[in-house]
Length: 221
Image (cartoon, rainbow, N blue to C red):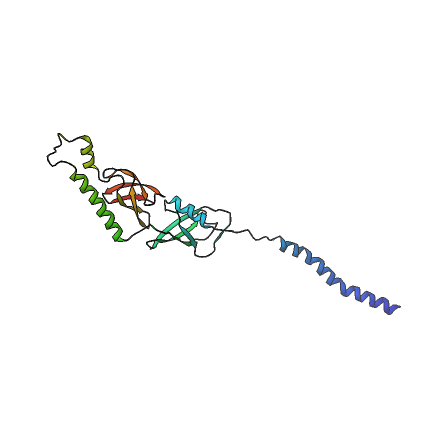
């Protein structure tokens, strides 16, 4: 009997540390499960398009591809366009970041256009030639014997216009680190220095630009 009682005491003593350790491990497990990883939200092409529009970059029919998956700490985090690089006449590379730098890291995306954003010199020369022909036709319509004293107001205004409505012209859009050239059509006439409305050839995008020459107008990003 004494031997059996002693064996029971030894067994209870041996199990006591293990039981205590198991009880102590419960709070540790609870604490570990309480450490929740913050949620991340993927950045979408729609957010990038919004940043482009704020810098007056065309987005119509543009296909936007993010170089690598990027996430932010909040959903639909506002983005800032840091720089733009022309890769080809129809493709630009964008460097972006979250407006709040703590939300996400800087990243790259590529916007591809089906047409427009043309830098080809041939297109520029073609627009210049067409505008020059239009101006020559307007001047030829004025009689050679006309003088300022007898000119009608309409003819006088026609000769003073630098750019006529409907004329093809090159739109130069300047930013901090980029110059984008678009082939557009003037929606109204004006003299050098005037601000007029111009539109892309398909009339899907419109801009306000200042007349520089009969073939060039300038806007800002």
